Figure (tube, rainbow, N blue to C red):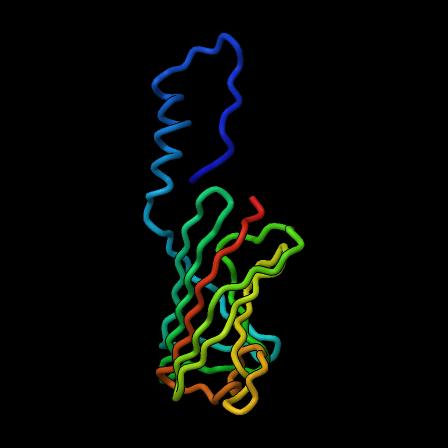
Length: 165
């Protein structure tokens, strides 16, 4: 809810409504509940489909700072597609020329800790984990990397970035 503060002019009458809008409402937005959203799960190959799994997201925007969480739990009918996975952001990222890093976790047969990259002006986010137990270089999560995904697998993403507006 936060927005740019009002520019006051000389001689303007300050009313209760203006004070509420400019001070109370802005202050309250810092303590508001998170906003739920439904991320879109895509890939660079054949599209995955959540079917009977769950895909939830929520975020908090304070000023232009967005804190976001995405949680995917694969169901018995979830199809994993092919290619590198990405998820839609709730708010477009700023054109800051910087990549923002957050954390990712894949819970399958094993637990895989990784990172998130939100690129400048991005509308999606990618999650990276080690390629395998013996190759710890990072790469995108895919249907088979770092392990073959199945029903019950979870992907959890937590990150923070600057919004475009």
